[in-house]
Image (cartoon, rainbow, N blue to C red; front, top):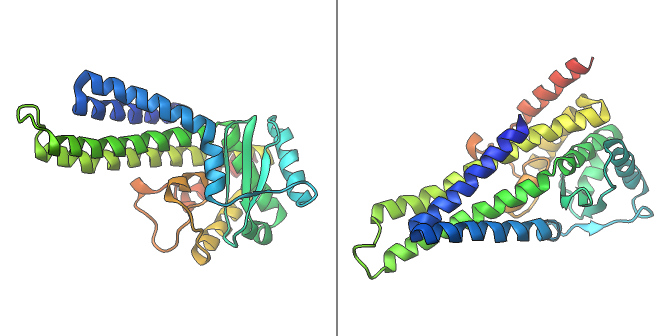
Amino acid sequence: MNQIKTVALLALLTGLLVWIGGIIGGQTGMFMGLIMAAVMNLGSWFFSDKIALAAYSAQPVSPAQAPELHKMVDNLSQRAGIPTPAVYVIPTPAVNAFATGRSPQHAAVAVTEGILQLMPADELEAVIAHELSHIMNRDTLTQAVAATIGGAISYLAQMAMWFGAFSSNDENRPNPIALLMLTILAPIAATVVQMAISRTREFAADAGSAELTRNPRALANALQRLEMGARQIPMNSNPAFSPLLIIEPFTGQAFANLFATHPSTEARIQRLLELEQQMR
């Protein structure tokens, strides 16, 4: 069900991109929108992992530098039936983690120094299992594609405003009110769809972690600890990469549900406890 919902949301994003292209340039604009989506998706497919790791200043660590971490990643990868991803550590006391890469064969897991210091072994294992589930489900690629299309939609919306403002042909000039609405609403709609995709994939990765570890409560406890840590030490990051993280890197009041990159921690914990009951 989660996979079907994700495909539908990605199709909606692509349709929105093509529709805006059509507003700007008719059939030619729609075709250009499709070409832009294809090119940007291809770029995301190849380079999203490098961009995300660089954005957080993640550093690769060898088995000699972090033996326990590597052993945990190796064991869980074997259990999941995927190649062992590269392991990175982010030099920050903030508590968080993420996975990236276009496929299980080209993947990486990154954890912060803070999470290594704070998490008990069973909770850290559950967090890593969550990230490996993202890799198994190719969620990192899905998020990169969604972010790229969303960025293209925002760009085209701005282009539509520019096209309308400087068009010399009064007959072909779009309605200025419609253009203004497009410029404002199209990026908002793209963001709402992106966030919906992100929330769907987080629930699926939580369930994947529970299956890998057979210990849903460990991840539930980890999420509580992560939420507290995010409030105490926010993780400075580019908002574009927030969907990659296991917990949203902000403090204070939660964002409105439509614009949250993650489901509420309470909802995630509730689902994990329900899974625990089912496993029993």
